[in-house]
Figure 1 (cartoon, helix red, strand yellow):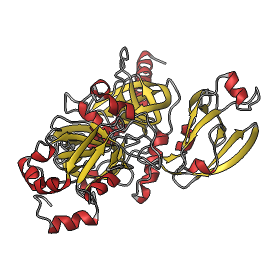
Figure 2 (cartoon, rainbow, N blue to C red):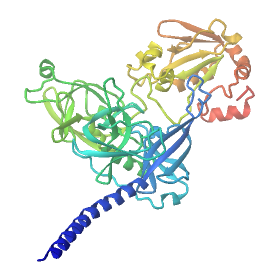
Figure 3 (cartoon, rainbow, N blue to C red):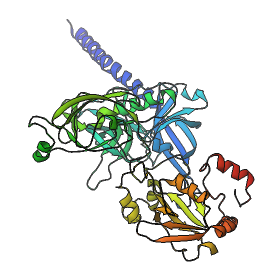
Figure 4 (cartoon, rainbow, N blue to C red):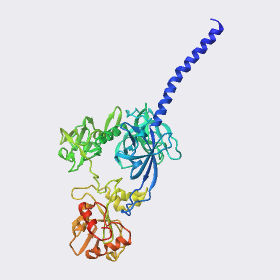
Length: 513
């Protein structure tokens, strides 16, 4: 072989090498560009209710978030991106045009929402991203989104470092979450976490704990899949409830007292809610040994994946309302098996109901006193430091269980000064226990007691014996004046009394009714 042939052979080999390496790179680039076209920027105009003035709205805010196109010509994003949204627009990567969107389905518990776009041409040249399996620990994932501070798509990488149950900041639910060493910045929320070209999570929140840096959390595939199946019929049922409260059974003495042998382990049942599905099977003092075949450890965890543990509620969360959950439990040392038909989780098991979204507050005004139910929306009205700024009575009530006799607390939020309420003008944030000697069960029943009152006076009493007395006739006479003076449109929230409220609105002339 002469020198010229040798040079030509080297050049040919070099070209072949370039071709071999450039083809996969080119394919990877095309794949990334296609994914980018499926990442959506979301613009939300949100006007949240003012729980200090429940007939009004707070100033509208302009918010932004991220999402991804999935099967069914819909966009998967976070619920908190569109919560209380009155106007929503979406925009594709690289496009200047914005399209009007609306909420198709929302699960605030899972912090997930599905959007649809009125103009279906929006989905042209986009490829629906499919749902993948959760990667193993220490595997790299890519987060796509539009963080604040710019209009361009941001792509960051991180390593999956932990998967276990966490509290979701949006609705304070307790579900499985993945943790990555990449911060989820404002605007990134709702963006997909990608591995192998598939969605393996939805970015939702960052860790603001002191000393935590670049830690973000995402909604994992198990939760996403549950919500997508729940959305198939358009009726939100959420995650089912087992209906028991348990505690760890790590104490040898407690374990022996529960009748367990040394080689047995489980979680001690300390409370069974009488209206829950578990009430047909379990009792306080039982030991929950296994759920859906997962053995429960003394610290109430199960091994959901090899060498990875999380709270046993993971097994319950895989089921839907109406499904039968297999359980194994011990009672007085005897082992039993059963199936529990799961039901929908009630609004709250606490006397203080959890935060709600996309709803107007309930209120009732009588004699210039503004009454509202106690809930987390009201408590969080004290701002980010509500843990220390909200009234101590409100915070204490969060630790009280509801019951069939009382499932909601009623608060005299404030007094609108008028002649009928002289002597009480500085009363506020007052939790009431009874009306004319009748104990309060919930806000609806309380409002009905005042609405139907035939006594000359209304006496409100708290648990310490303090009372407020209002003249019933004066309260009715001064109602129009009070509403007009303080520019309040209605004396109670819309729909509080159902058909009764509609009839009053048509017939009454009391300044808003």
